Length: 457
Image: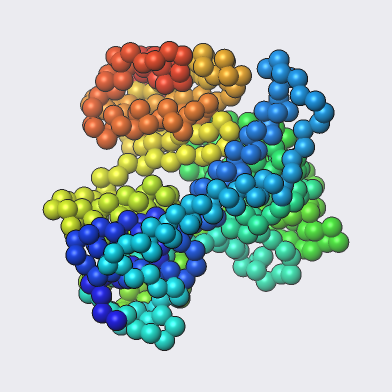
């Protein structure tokens, strides 16, 4: 079958791109081997944040007395019902994406595993489909270390954790980064004992020390245990589940648990695409290199979303679609390098991060200003009974533009957008510091923080 464009993968970039191409008069094929919507809809953002929501209710139910609210009896979590709620929310999203694609005029949805035959031809279960332009939106999957794959020890990844409908007695999580920490807090709040094992001396390696240390303190305050600097990891099967050998300075050398979750990074889904048939090489981690407009080294082939290594988030994947659509169809010029770093860690309270870290600003050597404020000095946080965390912002001392910020605390993932928007506008920090925000909110203390900037020593 001959098409104008073929899109391999129906993640966050593929479906909207298919719609735009079809609206431009193209005949389009979307090929998907598994579930519509990709990681975010099925095993990522939507289902995990639905679980976070259930865990948050359980936590505040146990904390009700602190707010003067009495609840009868012990708070118990029915994991089967928690999973059913998650399935309902995520399932509705997948059904929505599926119906959207199936209803697109000029778009054929093909189910199956796509592999390149040559530069303009993709094979799916023995049938060949051709197009001048091919867009890869195939995503990534959880990385599993070789030393774990070669054992008979049962383990789960972020994907298979979506099928858990029981409460683990003791959950060991290997990996102290964003995915692992979200699962650690939610399962501790559900009622499991939780231990996080991290090979590095601290969690969240890309963050500043004060951010990582405070997140650890928050989770430890809720009963999550950490084993850091855990080198020479190994596992063995036990009658009760699994034992993880932890070679570190403090604590016992082995942690026994009922369940094991591995959260040590992601692997791009490029190993079975037939890229060798078109001369398209990946980098050392398996990602497909792209230029600033998301074109690969092979003419007529683009890579969007997590597979290109230029962003591992739903919002960056969607922005990849926007970049490609603007450049091909919109008469515009958009580039990946125009994008500012921004993301959230959805523990509770959450972390909102934009731009450079303090460590990166210091390394740059530029003159800078810094402002901080503990959440204990934010009225809204005190009123809501959660003063954990802090705000921090970095500003260029010469241009007065905001370089980066971290808001770890109540509504931090929302409040940080006021800084992000001004950063995109390339306006000075005074646009915010002289504003008159609504009281009482978390955002109202951002101008106050900016009014107290001091030199970054």
